[in-house]
Image (cartoon, rainbow, N blue to C red):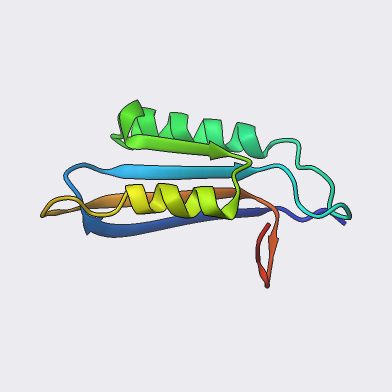
Length: 102
């Protein structure tokens, strides 16, 4: 049975402009098989955020099929850098279960 997880997380952090991290991952365990549309889901989310959400393309970082270390590094790079409250969006499309994202 294939399962896919879509995660959308909004929070406010101290940053100069709204920013987003979109993570897509096609591959889970061998038993799960590849997801066909996770990358497309991420591309569409970025487009919607650009068209309707007030995000410029430079505000949106995208990682496709990253390692956990790559996701953590990118999140660290998006850490608050100035005073003020703005919007940060984390979007994930890929495999996941109660034990974590895969």
